[in-house]
Length: 193
Image (cartoon, rainbow, N blue to C red; front, side, top):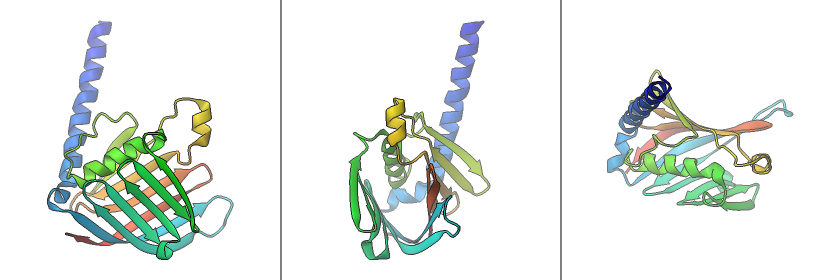
C-alpha cells in the first residue's frame, strides 16, 4: 500500500510538471523565432523602513541564447545575466557572481534561458520552481533553497517572481523579494526581432 501511495504521488507530481511545462512552452513560444527583445522597464524599489517607493525608468534587452540586461538611470543601476555570470550595478557600484558559485541564481538562469529558447529547455524538474496560471498570466516563482543556515543568511533574495502574459509571450514583471522589501521591474512596449 505504501509503495502504491508513493507511486501515485510521483505520478501526480510528474503529470503536474508535464502540464506546467506545456503551459510554459505555449506562453513563451514567440521567442522561438526571435533573436532579441527590447522593452521599456520601470523599476520600483520598496523598503519596509521607507514610506515612499523609489521608481525609475530604463530598458530591458534580452538576446539569445542567454543574455538579459536591465539598465536603469543611464547605467547607474543594472542587472545583467550573461550565461552563468550575473552582474548587478547599484548606484555605480559593481557586484559580480555566478550561478555556479551562488545557488540562488541557478534556476533563475535556467528559466531565462528557457524563455529565450521558446521553452526548449525543460524547467519542469527544477525543485525550487512553482508555476501557476492566473487568468492570462503564468506566474513562475523561484524560491532558492540554501544548503545550510550560513548560506541562507548570505542570500540576497528570498524569491524571484516572473509573470508572463500567455497571449503575447511578454514578460510583464520580475520581482525580487528580499528580507526588508522587494525590487520589482515591470515591462511594456515590447519589440521582438
